[in-house]
Length: 118
Image (tube, rainbow, N blue to C red; front, top):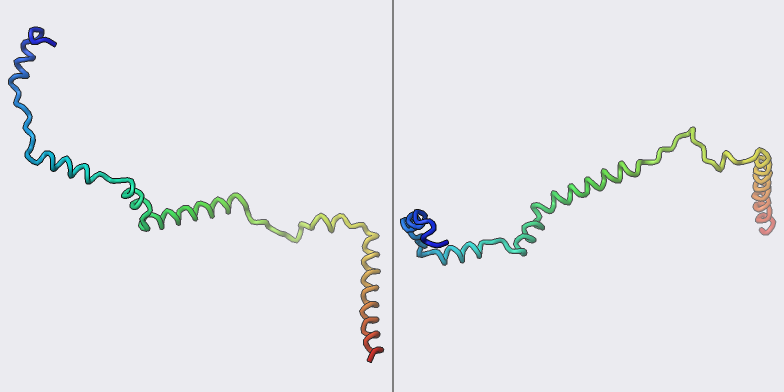
């Protein structure tokens, strides 16, 4: 932009005062730079026990709630019989009774054998 294009603007700009810097400008800039948080300060602040303990408790509570609602407890009732018992044939009951009798006679023979060795 040339001065001849807008003389009023240039006159107005000529009337403004120049900005004056403080004699402590360099000191203030250096202090502002030093006060900026660093990455190590951020990590130390984030992992401070004052914040870490409540966050850990919250995480444990969320995990416990998820496990509780996602895997409900298995409820056993007397009405529900296992499938294995339901599939036994009636003739198998006779075999089981015969096996019980065989075990009883075998146990009594065991005691008889011991008395003969004495």
